[in-house]
Length: 147
Image (cartoon, rainbow, N blue to C red):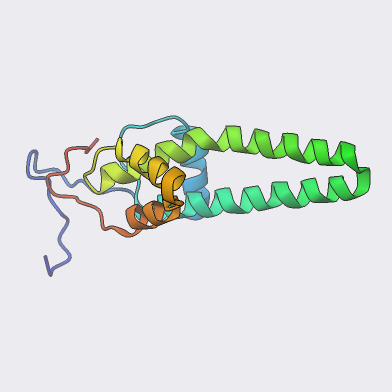
């Protein structure tokens, strides 16, 4: 389409697009509203902003933990490890959920997340998988994962 008219869904005639998000919206949606929601779609902006937020949050945990380790020695190191484990356990479910929803946005099954996990374990190519699903354009017309 070359004009700016909204994309119509083939099945119902309703306008169906994934919702672009700001950084704050993406973090709120992924961590609060859709923490463990594997249904629906996630826009590219929601996917990338959430991943940026996870990176920044993880960096903050490492910095705080490193300061505690430097000040408190072994006890601080133990606290740093516990902080990072808590961060990881808290972020793994929404990370998988946003990947599944992003796959739905490109009209692919969410089970492909398992392919990304296998690629990461076998060849360390999980980041390539994340980049690929993050840059592919959404499929708005005829998407079988529309809400």
